[in-house]
Image 1 (tube, rainbow, N blue to C red):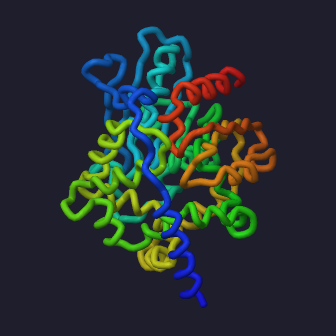
Image 2: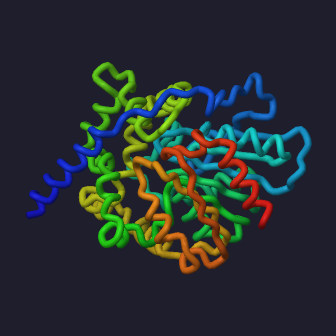
Image 3: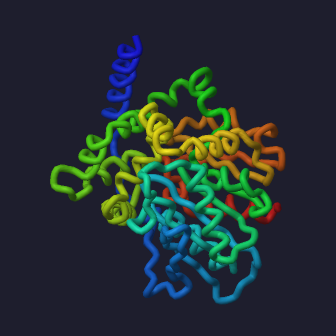
Length: 346
């Protein structure tokens, strides 16, 4: 029976995936998506060491600091630390210090030694990076996996954050209950997660027969309505580093039966015991929640049903933006203003 269900789900997921078309190329909506460190003197890259892993961080410093409190931006998949480039430029011009770290696994010097990527570990990486940078309290914005990273980090250490922003991925506490009983469409939109459960096959497909990773760019383009190819080329360069593709896919394999068995054999039980309470905790700081109305990967109903006073007792705002999954790329000005208005209220 389970096999029949898996085959049916695989067929439905395949049909949905086959129907997805790449977004349209539009270089006007996301101009100069990659920060040019030689020409943009406000920006530089610094390195932070956390337990033997080296994380690269984009640091933006305004010529005149008008706001004492920094903003930290966290990316997801398939992406890199340039993800929030448009918003970083916007806020540097407004006098904010801004930071954007690579997350665990997204560069060869920051891989997990055991090849498993638990969000709790990534969240504590993030907290350690903030400490290493000397940032005592911050505004934190996350997209995709980054949304969950800032969510868990704020649950683990709320005193570190003034507020957080969750973009494109909603509060995780009720996720499985919602997709089983109320938002079954999410199973279809999560087709790629099923595909990512097959080690070797997923890697071979995304890297392509010639190892050019052009298939990765094609895959990513389906999550956009409109996109700038320069940004996807930057992502291709990031994911094609040794070990990074396996790491990026490892995020999607953390809850599978194979991974659970692996955890039991390799001493990861403590990490599971740390992750589950964090996932079920409340966010005790204000939350800006933003979903895309035409997201091919995430149902906006997940935001409708999980963005509430129970999960976010310190207050929240929910906004919907007409775009694909990468709303900070497709609607950069609108997202920057949403963030700025929320910061001004708190």
